[in-house]
Amino acid sequence: MAIKNKVKLALIGAGGRGSAVIKNMVRCTENVEVKYVCDVDDTRGGAVIRELSKDQGYEPMPVRDMRDVFADKDVDAAVITTPEHWHALATVWACRAGKDVYVEKNVCLTTGEGYEMLAAAKQNNCIVQCGTQNRSADYAFSARDYIAQGKLGEIVTVKAYCMLPDSRPWILKEDTETPAGLDWEMWLGPAPLVPYNVSRHKGWYDWWAYSGGAAMTGDASHVIDLARMVLCDPPLPRNVFCAGGRVIFNDEREIPDNQTAVFDMGSYVISLESSQYGGYMKKTPHEVRFGDRFPEWRNNSTRIEIYGTKGVMFVGRHGGGWQVFGGDSFEVVAQGIGYFPDEKHHRNFIDCIRSRKNPNAPLEQGILSAAMVNLANLSYRSGKRLLGINPITGAITDNDEAVRLDKKEPRSIYTIKP
Image 1 (spheres, rainbow, N blue to C red):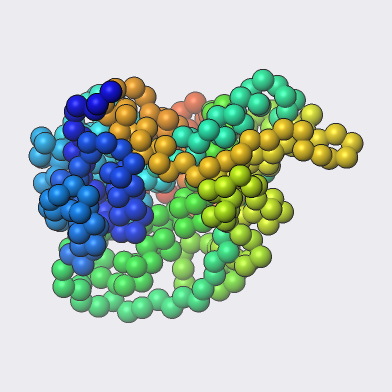
Image 2: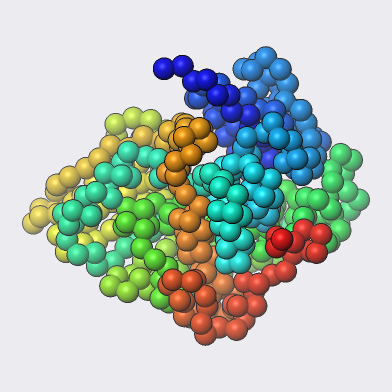
């Protein structure tokens, strides 16, 4: 059946990931066009505009201020791929303007941001798909079904890994004049106003003001979200503890390169190893993501190990699939081949714009998965102290410093509240 209703998108944040997402979203769906490419840096966006113009026959318009995009009633949805500190506010602004949203992880950096996003989406009847694409993978559904049917037995413990093979020296550069073509004040947005510094601009994953860290909120958020999905999306933990520090380079970066977090889920515990060192650890390779092979589990840097009373399940994100080992000889007793799910995830978003059905990665679950890694960071930042958590509301019950850190106030002109 022919698709009649055209969907018009706007890209907010024209970096590498954003450019890849919007191009794939147009090419793997029908009757979808991009009207705007928005970025506060004029040096970005030109390449994706040129490529999109070949696909759709006209050039998307370059724009600096996302509010100009949201004011256009012709735009159906926004694809938000900015640095993390902008995800929540951009989503709220888009929803209040009646736009559907695709927002990359980590979808929010504080508990309050998550609640404001959810309220804006519900009040304006907006579809919000989180960029946690494993929720559109067939193998994620089959792994969840296997566990839900009791075939793994009672869950005893879960070990999640995001041990990235990345380490590099870092020197804090001096403040300078803002480069031509960059609106630095708007790049900072809700974050504190500071002079331009290339170490902040290009290394924003190294600062608490703009992210929760490349390994933790940038990547481990995927692993935790997949683990939560296959475990049938449990509520938040009762307690969280996180320790770590800078291991390879003891420099001036705020974000640690090694963190170990423990989440008390009630009847079982989830541990998370999040790091940026060790070249012997490898992310799932291309031939596994797009083939019928499984990862080498021992050095797969983003694997999940789910231990039950009947066996252990290894799950690999981004196409790694799953295998269950058990029996006296520890043989494979069940498995599901994986395939990289980006296209399915992007098609699901466009389908939901048209059907108004709930997307595969709804905002409610994106916020809960974000809360897991955000709470781990709060434990670390508050002195590596245990956090008591209300698993229903996410409220921190016994750590005043963590509560203070979670309430970081945006600049008044970028407030997230109505």
